[in-house]
Length: 410
Image 1 (tube, rainbow, N blue to C red):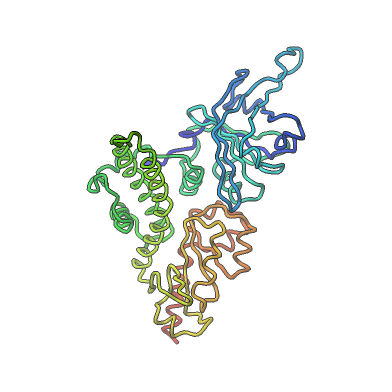
Image 2 (cartoon, rainbow, N blue to C red):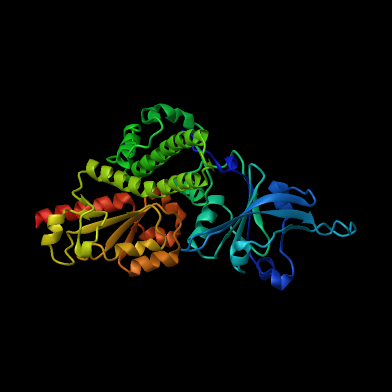
């Protein structure tokens, strides 16, 4: 199935490092940023005083993001003086995002297919910044914007790119998603359990086997389940919207809010459970001994414990025959949650789907005794030094198998 491309969502992107003048209106007495000729040629155009609908987004390192719906105006500041060369600027109003940004932050200015501007700000050196560099394929240079136009020759969106789009809150659907309808037909307009949905996803891509390539299988299963889920979700949400939110007392605002929150919470929790389900399926297919959700010290529950709870209880601290694997679809600062789990295990392994975590964060993990495990297809979003340290899912399975064999021999 086709995965879509950036051109399906955006016309173009401009990236720059914010200067004092750009980010602090009190220092410059203005709320505006200069645009380049290439940006105007690529996607902004040169319509004087064009007022865009704009969505402002601030993405922190570990904190929740900030979003504000507003506007921005693109204009030629020198139009009243035709003897001087044009000087195009983008004027932006004050809002929670522009009040949070500061010099040194990176601005990603994109225009989507509907003509809306996305004004996305990420702190320099943050994971969000690294992810956006990977998604858009441009980096800031000098003081001006670096820009590019998107086209049909660009590669299809891979798992990491789609992950980042989802983090931005950009709704996407596969170009050939209608082919999934026959698969989800049995569910009607009701969500099955996550375990059932994960199993359905694996069964409907029978050509993908963990025995052949655990990393590819894990990402393919997750991606396929995500497509199935979004297709079913669209059907269920459409039906509920058709029914409306009206009671005898009038518009049911509380009912609408509750339904909307339910949709968002289901999306957030489902991916983590799906990841664990597919990890289990891969381990089962490869005949790796483990227990899922076992209770260890202080009522902690590592996601996966190797080889068994009985072996863990009988072993001494630091026993090399023991392993544990945490699973977090998004890592952020939550990686520290695995530290107290399974105290007898010296090195804690953590599998995540998050692309482009900063080197500062991975160094902290390494210093804390955490080995990050990332499916091989996402490794390219990390720098060369990080890639030498990262484990793939296949690496972890090989180590778990080797330790089990070593234990049997002794």
